[in-house]
Image (cartoon, rainbow, N blue to C red):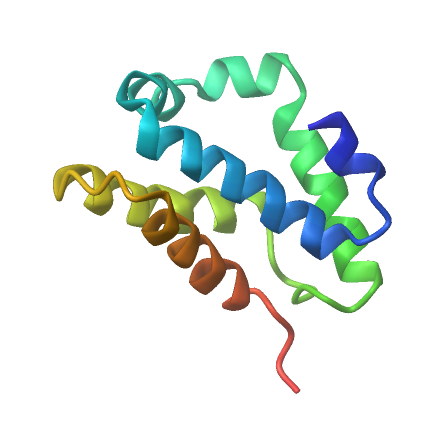
Length: 110
């Protein structure tokens, strides 16, 4: 996540980060189970703050809606992840497609 915070293209950095997490969940179901219950771990390790920092950089560049929050991403990713897990979808291309769809919902209106 540190590399993502330092990347000058914050939206692409965010897409890569969320895509990598989704790919990991698709191929490692235990990781998905643990991640779903890891709110305390995320807080203690500063991951929510790092995500907020990446999002703030993307907002400053105008590539993410100004009202988007880390919780928005957690809810959208959690939603499609839950369904894909229930459907036993393991194709990482499908998971990355939903990452793309979810993050594009955060693009600013033009």
